[in-house]
Length: 149
Image 1 (cartoon, rainbow, N blue to C red):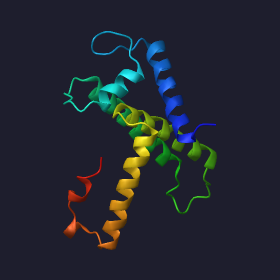
Image 2 (cartoon, rainbow, N blue to C red; image 1 turned 120 degrees about the vertical axis):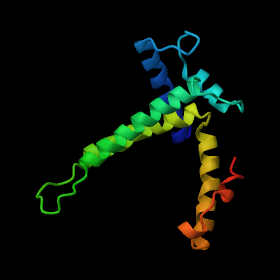
Image 3 (tube, rainbow, N blue to C red; image 1 turned 135 degrees about the horizontal axis):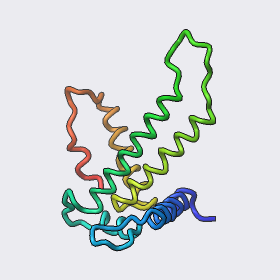
């Protein structure tokens, strides 16, 4: 069986294509939208303006991800005097809903599972280095992110 993260990316791409087709969603040229087209545009190293499909779908998927985060927040208990209990089933579903939109964001940005792993690994090392240097607001800068590709 293929890598699970690769499979998640494939499944999400197919789901997005299904939704585009079912809802009659088109690209800026009026053609049937395909995730492959969005992915390829996101992977290109050319400038993308505010009216590009890349910008449009990054904004759409970010809005959806933010809403799923809100829904997860609604599952959490904050009334310490309450006798309620967590619904871990609902919490897990909301987390997976977030994953759906997070993967769509990654695809829109032109990243596949391998690219996500590569960038994650690089950024993870940056975060470890920051912790080893007592990272704080006073010494914060983004120069250590500039070499992440």
